[in-house]
Length: 354
Image 1 (cartoon, rainbow, N blue to C red):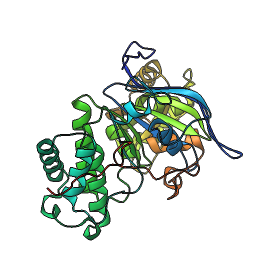
Image 2: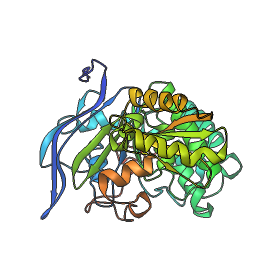
Image 3: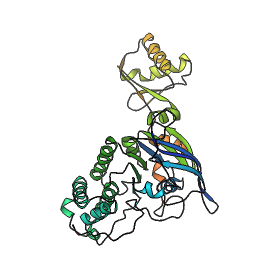
Image 4: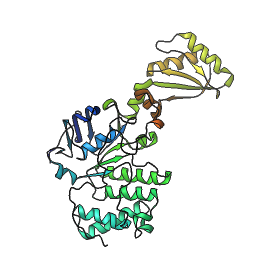
């Protein structure tokens, strides 16, 4: 396994160059380039059919690209698939567990397929059952689990081998808020221990909570990327929100700002809460607005700056609302095999009695 470097000098756990994949006339991936720094979470956002799931399938060796290259954990996705499958984990959009086995047996089986010793496979299974609040149901067949329980079991299975790189494709779809928080905590714990995560999601809160950086993909192309704050700044800068000491002065404040013709400041407006909102692009403009109001004798009770929400960023760069961009049940961009929860290439007889 070789070490690869990002453009900023950090270690790249995932490196993709010029990735192309067609499904008939549909170009699911159209020259995708991206990097994921080791020990970080990259959030991948995009509308339905954008190419997110195809990207995950390629990086997990489930689909072969038509062109381009990809390295994960130092392994070439095309030339070293067997080695790669040993160091990655994956959870697809829908839970994939053996319905006839118990929760503990499911996790133990995956651990043994990953060559964990029997004792370690048992202890790791019990550890994850507890973390995902499944201990009481550990001996029950998975067919008796609720949808949310199956989802948690599937997530636990993807983590049992402590993968160096973990793919989470819409991991918390259908989960209640408490369980979603448990998943977030486990992902953060893994990253703190050195794992790298590629996360596709349509939950803006999830992206902000977990992702160190974001990539927005649409029609098979990367159309935006960077840290959350950077993307917000690109969309529309900041809004300066001012609460006057006297509510009656709000209209006068807004009029004074509009009349002053400050460089780059388009104007101001008031809202029903008595706040004065001023779009700004720089700290110099902020200083100019505050200085103007002080010179005109207005009193300021509170002042803050506000960046666009991630929902607004998504809408601006894709033209779609996040709530309208959920993936179809069969995947977002073309046919392909169902995503397994553990990435091994062996189909072997494993004793699952624990």
